[in-house]
Length: 241
Length: 148
Image 1 (tube, rainbow over the protein chains, first blue to last red):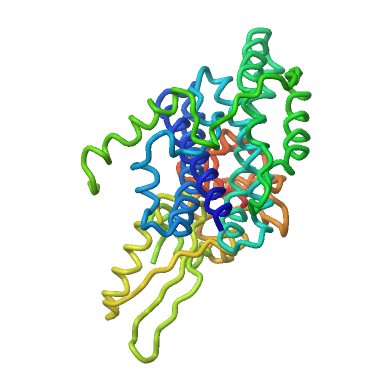
Image 2 (cartoon, rainbow over the protein chains, first blue to last red):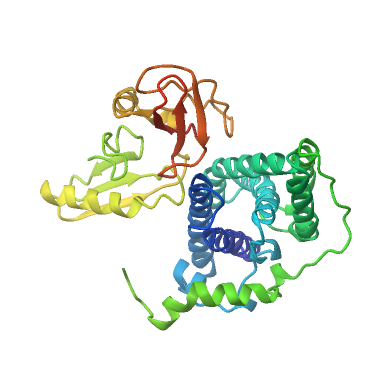
């Protein structure tokens, strides 16, 4: 029960923070179709976040709903992975982040769809279909940029190198959780390696492994993101459109 | 009741409406719906529209339940729904197939001229469930409901 709550909260936080970051691209993406695509992916992430946080609130039993969890917690109480809170960087960095995130979420949601917890299974079965589209989209751009011009290749490789260390935190063993993310690493590697190879990019070596997100220890970037995301709700509690 | 964002099909034809039950004792109506995509922003409007339609039909006391399992699939769009989508210029989805996570779409026919010579412009369109396509024969852009 405690592990189910913690996993629902962690995955809900991953999706919520990813949605907020992707939303920052609205009106600024390199082309109009991409603007719409990133907003759509953000919306999918937000949809999954709402389901996961609502369920986490029910499991906690302290009367907190999705809004209380999203808007009234401080950074130390968020358990999202560091990967999703990193700044968007250039478009290549955003696509590298989306590639790693969706290659993690797809097998994770798929495994959840078969887990014993009915609610998590329903959420997993729903969200995995959307994750497959996200992975496809990220893979398409990573291939296009990696196997593109010298400049796009250089920047795509730099982006993969920059975010790669943050992937390791995703697979920290979590015994007792409805799905142990550590069991998904091979699936993730298979998907990401295939994309990198087609994109003529080099897979970075695992080395420095920043972590702490799942324990509430974040980079400074999360605090700024939360300030922007939460200000309206905190300034005007209970405000409605 | 029509879908608020694709106004040519009803929520039943789209497969969003899962059940309508009336309590024989109290007359209270319970409507069960499921979203196409988890983040579909039309869900709140759909819930409000259902309550409004029920109230207008003499059922002021109703409940709208949202379920997520089994997950919605484009395979639930009825034949009538598909025909209406096509007539409105939205290419209907190919069968999603059992078990496949995201199936390959072999050819999407242009809903205007019927040509299979089409290409995807963007996988994400004006709503979460649609992609942007273009016909190479008649040059018209069109929406395609993505198989899910």
